[in-house]
Image 1 (tube, one colour):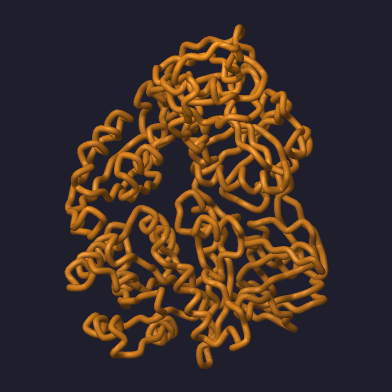
Image 2 (tube, rainbow, N blue to C red; image 1 turned 180 degrees about the horizontal axis):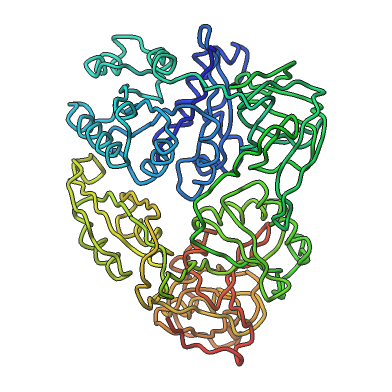
Length: 625
């Protein structure tokens, strides 16, 4: 059949969503009257703000007589669960690699998943208009690195024989011949994405049609319609489906027991561009959107009758981090948002687990605290930000690494492979920083030159094997050490024997010792004690953290002290004095910064740091590893 199901996979910021934009435009998806935004596939506000893909999304284009279903997948390993489940929906992949940066850890992560499922891949070297790619030497190195990666990941002979295209997704063109690139960049020759469409049709196979004796489909994504409710999205593996057909939903309930629900298909949709259009029937091999049940879950098998076998549920890599979500117990609870009770917080977290198979929910010994298990700090930050924008107030603790016991009872912890691309002048500082966190340098290779504000710089690529514990809080320190010029990414490798104690943070906290409002006079006297987080005029309470102490212990301070007004004045005492500067603590910075005895208080308007024990006479100021 004239149908191709493909996904676009790549590392963060290598141009996936931009490429899909131009594929949709050049296939005639939008009319001349349509107002089309950039990165049209990034539908969530958070995706647009951060410039990353968080949720996998579907679209479809018509190229000549072939229908191409496209899935845009996240590039960050924290959202790897999206990639793992979406690969079952497609039959091939377009691998996008930056022509200057080359294949990075997340490239390896998603490619490994695709190759292990037998998918064929088209390699697209993107951003060939960058100065580093002008002579073709770096591009040839990137192609060789990618080929080595295919072999390293166990690609078959047919998978390793992949076609190569050179593209500039931002301008919407590609070519199989690198000799044409200078002409396309200069505009001497007009370019388009037609070579990519042709390669997809010729090189990637049409979906294999199974015969299970009737309709069969795996639910790999969920949607919502204001008119028909919850939607199940997936590839029809066998048979066909039409509205009114009586089918079964086979899934699991909250206790993990198998359930079987019979329902009629009320509405059926397929993709046309970015829109879901009503369809009278969808055949095997195509992607269907099914309505009829309010209980759809990712991993459910939809089947026509008892004789159709149940498909094995999706297998997702296990989580490596856990974070405690708690009811807000601060003195400011309920002032800026909805102070949720434990029942509502539990329901919201369980709802998230149903939609995201990469995270898990666990009860704790405390009735108002719940443990969420996930992949990384960014995944937790996105969930927290979504809940915050829904108007909820709650608290979260520091991410904790999940330890396991091996066959001999020995404690093990997750190990990650961190890849760093930095200017050579910063390499020694970065190496020292990672070795302090028990990282082992395993690779140090030049990665070319790059033009920057300080002229042309030699860059090097470092690889470290480092415990996941060592990476907590490392991203901000790394960007500071490299003045924002470094590229940092990592991927999970395996569980290894525990590496020993490790101090998470070298500095203590400046903690308010009373309730009140911060005063500039008081903060001026505290500047020499460390770095302040809180500006003047902000309400505080006892136990709230207002800054970072420049020694390793905590310090209880009075940020509310006012200047005594008298009729005695010294010469020059009234000179204008202002604070040197404050450190803005974003949600991600707070997650990286806090320690085990601290909470992040999250409200729709504010993010505060506090001690778990608020009363100063009931907690120690001495910090331990």
